[in-house]
Image (tube, rainbow, N blue to C red):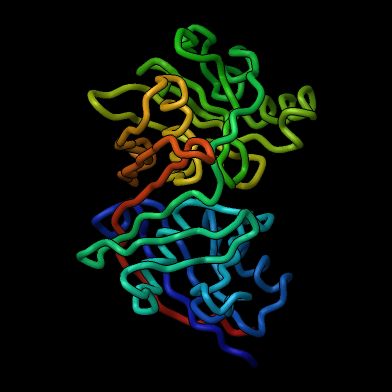
Length: 291
């Protein structure tokens, strides 16, 4: 029997049982692709990460990210949490993770209690979709979708595209994913959605935002903290504003009883709009998987 140690951490929080839980296998050598996927399904978290030696020795590690059903090219809280777990490997506070979407740089917080990551790609703004579709998927009335600033719009910066939807406070509070509506949406818009849909709802709250994310087609009815949605949203809002740079705090997970704080930045550079997201991490469990 083979043994593979793991740890779990709560990400984008300063307290246990807040934020988004993550399982990390700090040494995944010897695990097959199928075993990684099976372990991610067994943990039943939004993502699990598996750390392998880098292909380029100039980098820290190759990090593979699996959700309950598939491998992901990039994700936010898995990189923040894995960076926190591997902080002892940081050179000058910096880690470099090889991933399908590209190289992810992770900076460890000065107090060691969290990390900030840079999205591996510049912002990509995709298709717009009908407000009625977004409302149906969120289980709310079309009047709760705000379109003065933008219609529901797909955006990404290395991860899966997210449908960015501004909603009213009442709409955010009442939202609940409608699985049948999600299935209809991907069937009716195959070119734009490619068979998958992640719905990222947000509303203004003071100088920051409140958000919720639904991705039931990938096994996550609701996610308490979604870094790979926060970064394209920060970039998309900068794109709309015409500004050069911005910093924005996003609160997520409140409705799930797992409040999370995601601190984002976005800036324009020669490659386009680039974004970061960071937050705190708290260790929770240690154990081993027996295979």
